[in-house]
Each structure stands twice: as structure tokens, then as C-alpha cells.
Amino acid sequence: MNPVSTPEIAPASTAALADLAANPLDWHDLADRVLKGHALTEAEGLAALRCPDDQLLDLLSAAFRIRRRYWGKTVQLYFLMNAKSGLCPEDCSYCSQSKISTAEIPRYNFLSRDKILEGARIAAEQQARTYCMVISARGPSEREMQAVEQLVPLIKSQYQLDVCACLGLLTPDQAARLKACGVDTVNHNLNTSESYYGEICTTHSYQDRLDTLRAVRDAGLKICSGGIIGMGETDLDVVRMAFALRDLRVESIPLNFLNPIDGTPLAGSRHLTPRYCLKALALYRFANPASEIRIAGGREIHLGSLQSLGLYAANSLFVGDYLTTRGQAPAADYKMIEELGFEVTQCEETGRCGDPNA
Ligand code: SF4
Image (cartoon, rainbow, N blue to C red; front, side):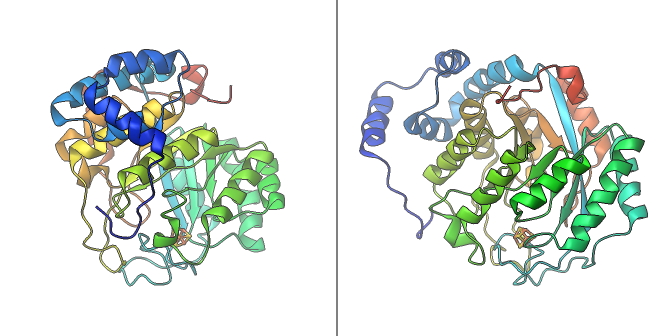
């Protein structure tokens, strides 16, 4: 699939894969074991990702049993606010806001207080549990930090919303300040596996991202971290990112499916099928049973008419638009959720919130 990244499969996994080829996995048996605490192996993860299409419903049904244990039939909605658009000095190859992107997108500095508060109002109106403030930046400037510190208490005093901040790389001091002003969660995606990271970005490293996540955890904030599938990585990269998120005990995992935006280096890359996306969602549920798993950007493009099936493995969606691309109309999301017999709900109503650290 990808000529650059060829992470080696450990010999033990090669033997296990051969064994699984001879004795295919029973997905429900695997779900039983996961529910009893079994940590998915690399070979099992690859098997899920490569599950034959005619077993896809079995795979999703087994993933749903895990989802149901931690999240019932609830769906958590997140609302994105692009608070500073198109001004990033980094070179992430998938991103329309990078310094190397020529995508035709809005470019503006940190939005006014009124616009950010108006976004929070819309988030609450659209039944979001979490309002995500995102800036395009390597990391926040002091002015941006101060703006966030002033805005978060205002948002939380006016609306029943959790606040997630996505501000780029953070120092331990910045993470502590975000915690102190009332931010609940910080988003910082791993994006892909450690071995593939250098193929998608050269201006910062995978280790930089891990350092930020460590600072976030040490500050007592919840971690939102996921990635993007369809950037030319191998199946093994997809599995290893799932395991890296497991090792970090990430509470919330947004799984994006590459929207190859014109003007970015990945424009024109289209490797995914709806079935592969569903298998990836199931794999992430098996690997991270208690975590919130969000079907993020690209769901409309890649899952198409199968979007609703994704919610048998995942339990969360973005409602409204993405950072620089349009999302499905909220009414269509509510209809899909209702037709599934699921319900949009607030975190507090689900009890334990699927927190893998609880
Ligand atoms: S750091 Fe974030 S905003 Fe900047 S190029 Fe990378 S993904 Fe885009």
C-alpha cells in the first residue's frame, strides 16, 4: 500500500498471523476476552483490519458488545470551532492550514471573544457535549493563552459544555494553566504510527507530540488523541497507532479518514473503502475498549451510506462542520442516531464516561 513505510512485523506476530490464517478468529470470542481484560495483540489487530468482508457484520457486532458495555447506546457529540485558521508554520502534509498548503481556505487570527462565545452557543444548541477550540499553530502564543484563560470560564459559566483545547504543542506550564482555567480536555493527535510520522511531517516529531501528551496528563487534564487513516500508511501503522493510544490510556480517540484536500501534498490520495474504515473502527474499539471513539473527519466521504454502521463500534461524532471542510447537516446526524435507536447524551448521563483511567 505504501512504498516508504514498511515497519517490520515482529517474528512472534508473523507466527501468530500464520496461526490465525489457519484458525480464523471468532470475533465474539475475542470480544469476550477483551471484556475480561485481554489486551489485543498485534496479530489480532491486523486480523481485524484484514477481516474478510463477509465477516464484517460479525466483527461490528462483536465490537458493539464492547461499546455497549462502556457506552450503552449513547452518542456523544463534539463541536469544532476553528479559532485561528490557516496560519500554521508547520508542514503536516494532510493539513489545509499548513505552511505548505495552497488550499483555498479562510485565513484569520484568533477570533474575537464574541465569535468564540457565539460558537459555544451553537455547540450547546446542537446538543454537543464538548466545545473544541482549535488554533492552527505550532503552539499557543502568550496572547492566545491569555485569551483562552479568559474565555473558558465564560463559556463554562454560560453553557453546560465541556471544553477541549487544541492549541498545538504545549509546555508543562501551559498545560497546567489550561487545567487551572477550567479546560477539561486537550486534543493533540498522534496522527499515525511512530515509524510513519516522518513521512507526514518534518517540522516537529512524534516525540514532540508525546511530550505534549505527557504534559497534558501530568497537569491532570483528559487526553483526546487520535489520528488519520488513509495517508499511505500500512495496516501495521494503523494497528500500532491504536496500541500507542492504548499505552497512553487516552480517554477520547478521534479517528479521521483522510479527506485529501486540493492544495495539500496528499491531494488525490484515496486509498480507503467504507469497509476498511469500519474494520478500523472495530479494531480501535477492540484495542481501546473503554475509550470514547469518535468517527471524525472524512466520515461522510469515506463511509458514505455506511456511516451509521460505524456507530456500532464508535460512540461519538463531530456535529456540524470540520475545521476547513463541511460536515453533514446536524439534522441528518440526529436522524441517523435516532434511526439506530441510539441517543445523544451528555457525559454525566452515562455514568462512568468510559474513562479507561477510572
Ligand atoms: S500543526 Fe496542526 S494546524 Fe499546523 S499544519 Fe500540523 S495539523 Fe495543521
